[in-house]
Length: 410
Image (cartoon, rainbow, N blue to C red; front, side, top):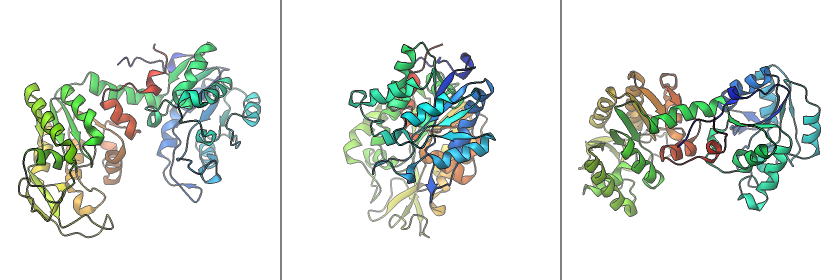
């Protein structure tokens, strides 16, 4: 995986029209942004280009846009918030066509240091489709507005969408530069290097609900790491594969043989594969998710037939925390239990606390683990929290991400 990509520091943007693909997929409630983390994360790249005298054209998707273009999924609130954050007007092109006459006119009127935000890229309806289904036409129209392209949307980098990867072809054809922004560069540096060139000992922690979601990640990380820790709902499929009674716990019966293979592979490679030794159990899943719930702790091989495991137990939490203590690199993807419930968050808190106290490089792989770190107050203690759930998982699988791959090599 060649990760030596051109960044915004590697070309002169003065006077040039630079299209920047951001990740402004922010949560909205009644037209108000409820979490502006992604907007804040995009600012360093945008400010760098403004200061360099570029004409900065921003684009992003927002939401799933299942009912076609609509004001509820318009990027208008993002333009307003960006204007406040940058201390200058961000001209918003409200046209649902995204790259139509209004966009062309707005770009033609730009002076150096100006910023334009295009409408939600998914309003075109062809953003996500295969290139031959007119994604190509959209990508070319985006490229026609610009001289150079910067991808700073790691959360979308695993998708070969028109505005993420296909556009680079047309920028290259006109002699422009395709680079990555500061946010993307940070993801490449942390996630890429953790997997390809880790400082050892390297410990990987995988949690979350399903084994199926992490099949290739388990396989890839076993080859790269020194210790692999399994928690969350996916641990019970491993425990069942060992012949344990797991009661009503979450299980993926189709993946039992795979779990056996992975345990055998770890042994063959001389890697440590840690599974829960005790489990916090209850009569059923909490409903609502944060409801009071009566729990008890049993050994991992003694789960009663009518109970289900919902978090790792205290002995397991201690075992996992110990495994992290001497690590130099730790990658964590997926919570240890139903962390949204205070009673069932203890395992996830113990792991987060262990990571916060180690001097290792600690990398949180997006999604629920990032949410857990933020909610539990450990975010500022981690070296890096990934902005992409699916993208970081695919990175950990060792896949080439289209959004990274499409940028020019240095």
